[in-house]
Image 1: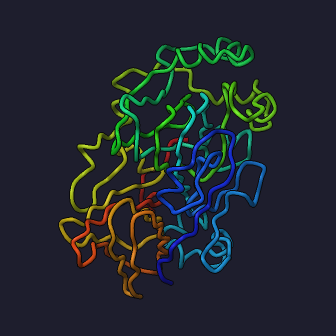
Image 2: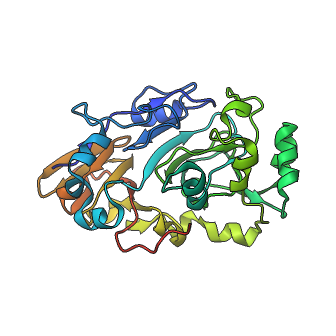
Length: 348
């Protein structure tokens, strides 16, 4: 099995965006396709097969992995996690602020939805306007009745005003644990890694092309869905612990692009081949090329790659290297991977 280039997997959504995805990935872009699901074995909630990634030969990646999980994921991965890839990668290009929402953790998902995963996620910022902000967690401890009242009253101002905010810059990374309410400003463009589910609970939906009263609670009703909400106060220092600034990420070679707490859920490593070839150990990976032109080489052969390409690497391809071309182009991007087979157990 060899690494392969993945076709684009954009589709319509309820918020605006997608043109920067189109520019990076060479189509199709927006105006209402703000997400691309990359290397996805996850379906949109209640809308399968939408969301599933296709391989170049037309097969669903989900079906290919199920047919030979050890070749795709490796025997150690399969022994611990089964045939689930344990990761979903997305591009999110926002031309509209994301509504305040949250994702359930694993315990809630298991209890109320019969699923093994929640939706802890993380963002690697590709672009952001000057002063662009995210809101993550409540700045002060809240009560369930207060939040429920805001949701029922469609009080977006109260919800936005209650969040702890943080400015983000291109190159920064941030972990968003399940349960925390969050939003992202218009103009921000991120590479997102997350648990392999599509589980979102909306706290507001005014101005968005979605009926939150009907579709915003995972078919559980808000009385149950809001039990997934983390009501605790998040301080500035709490946010500091969730952020890995670009100064700690951007250097030649292979460097972690996520706070250490993400390792239980997924891994992301930025590569920069300006100093020479970068080696990556064998394992299932989604490689997103963000700059330059070069080559991904493995024992089975080599693949020319350039900015905007997404390469799916099966375990069976073995160890591989990433390097620039003969014209001196620096090849940069992110290697997205599931948690290691010996990773710490993710919190429930």
